[in-house]
Amino acid sequence: MKTILVTGAAGFIGCNFVRLSLSRGYRVVGFDALTYAGHKESLDGLGPNFTLVTGDIRDARAFGTALASHKPHAILNFAAESHVDRSIEDPLLFVETNVLGTANLLHLSLEYWSGLGAADKENFRYLQVSTDEVFGSLGDTGKFSETTPLDPRSPYSASKTGADLMVSAWHHTYKLPTVTTRCSNNYGPFQFPEKLIPHMIQCALQGKPLPVYGKGQNVRDWIHVEDHCAGILLALEKGKPGSNYCFGGNAERRNLDLVHDLCLILDELKPRARGSYKEQISFVTDRLGHDWRYAIDDSLAARELGFTRKHELNGGLRSTVKWYLENESWCKKVLGSGK
Image (cartoon, rainbow, N blue to C red):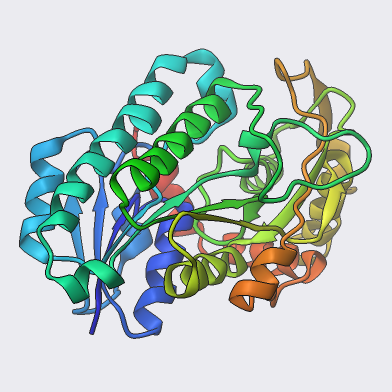
């Protein structure tokens, strides 16, 4: 049974990846600082093959101890500050966590990898989970791919770009076997309700306005978190060292249209006393530097890794809304944690 170490394991994508990895026979060590967006409740009941270590990726001693204690066959870095609005308010925190934290992981991972035997060195991987936002913004046509130049537009995406470039540098300079993955917007269970879809669900249920930036015309490509995690696992198992792989949902939607879709699903599954949830939609001042459109061409991942998607957007949104309706206790815990 191979052991993998997953940073950011208590976050949205991380906890879903932990579940998938356990189901595929891995032993998983989670490493998480348990900030406002990381919660032990997202990792409840995972069984004896999962261990959670509380620690910050900027803490060299804590991470080094985890490596020495658990001797992983691979390290996957999901840990990141990830909300664009928060990065605009506090950009230095994003630099500290996403750039300096990643540098710390790479430094310690290189030390660890260098001390492995020949076979373990050959099979070891460091996988960096990144975002399509490092590519900047698209116009009305075209898609991002592995060869798209990096052009970040927000403090968040700039910090992720810095991390990605260091991962590349550690591979080319030190030959550390790294793989980087980049994805479009994720949705699904366990997402902290600051992101668009769970935020709209929570506001709707609480009778609050549904705040849409600008006129709601910005376009995003949406991938279900389970499809994204399956892609990451393929990249871990089949990806070439030094390579980048993109994963998308092939499901572009204007933000306003997406909110309308969520309202229609809620109208059916949990109707208001009167009228539609659409009546709660409000328009707010647009985000600073708001990227116009994202879309991903993931044909390379399909060819090299065998990547496919199981979820289409309409069904995925419906199952996501149902999950939040059926897991109100989780929502109350994470929203009431005071973090």
